[in-house]
Image (tube, rainbow, N blue to C red; front, side, top):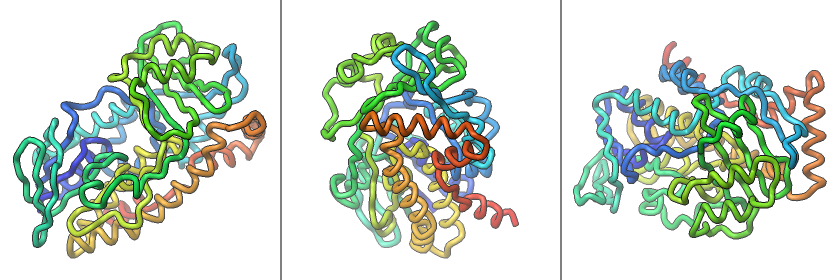
Length: 395
């Protein structure tokens, strides 16, 4: 069997690793000229953690992970208002949690690709045509490919989804936020935040800052907006929106790199009734984006890729495997998306009253027993699907 996977991000690489290990011939197409260096810190747990363990890559992820003691909300002077322990989050996630940079997670997945995987950068799909028992692809480099399966793993603004399922506006649910992320060097800022994930305790907009083991600093921002369209100049937009915040924010904004080196996007979800059509399917954020607010996009991307590969291996046909993948994984994503929408006001309060309610909830979380209740609310109800699939395969 031959599969073409469009997108060399987390979901695409995970699917390539699994199918390649199962004996498929794989071509991975990535429109970027090479691996992306920019990204943000991921709290990696849940289904993706279980899949990473089954794939044998967990030790490498833990090696590249970053130690975080606490997520700390601070006021305009940097004084700690309230926080919650990462140890409690790890317990709520059944003991499995790694804080890792997104580019490092992709790097580990690339390292584990079987030799039979053909990874092509600066190339994407231009046209998709159905064939009896497969697909024919026209690529942006002028070549053609025939395959038994095309998997669109090319993110929330998926080209494969557009070509096969129609305009993005049919499926994208804008949640009313914009987000940005970047990294920089600043020893003083690093010393201020080392070991913590520091967030401004603010209404309507938030800046988060954290330190890496190599001395660099990561920053991410989220703000409420009713305008889905992205700004022409991301750097200028970030400095304008957050410029009046206190603490170390002015120093962070001064270090914000040019727009080309800033990750900037809408906070949105992709909501679709079906993820497959013929021999074309979608995986990761192309079909199941839960949004930054849920904090599980990377984990669900790997988890979904793992489930898809397993169902293709177990079913008697590709079509049956795609049906089983959707039946098993669609309910998980619907639940996670619903939780993310509910949690949006908690993550970034729209009023001072809601901000004070969040402070109170986190302070109560310090009481015995309540810490696990709050932590479980943050990570959501766990899914055991990947563990069950792995147990069945080994048994």
